[in-house]
Image (cartoon, rainbow, N blue to C red; front, side, top):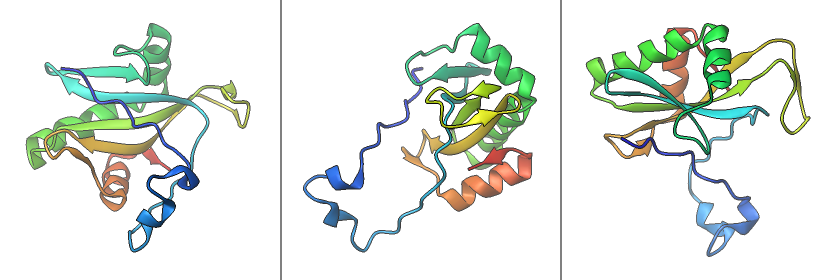
Length: 144
């Protein structure tokens, strides 16, 4: 099973046919962290870890994510959502590696994983931010 990638985002000014399509819509803005995009899901009863451009994250990313202590929390969230809520979640987050960030905007004191979104593959849509926040809070995960 191929995990969905996070959609490429465009600026509001470039929306087609025009930015006015957002009028009357509820918008939720979240902080953009400067790290490396990871997506996590359960595939064949195993935790799959992928990057934006790779279906299987490199060993370095997998090892660094495990070292944060967040891997088991994300895995528990995804498995519980499948069992208890019939949701097949793909959790998206940023792995913030110690040192200068990829675009050099931030400096991190340690490796961290911060969740920024979750996609329900059964529903075919992203879950609302308030629900994402509640899930992350319940499992002790950082969320933007």
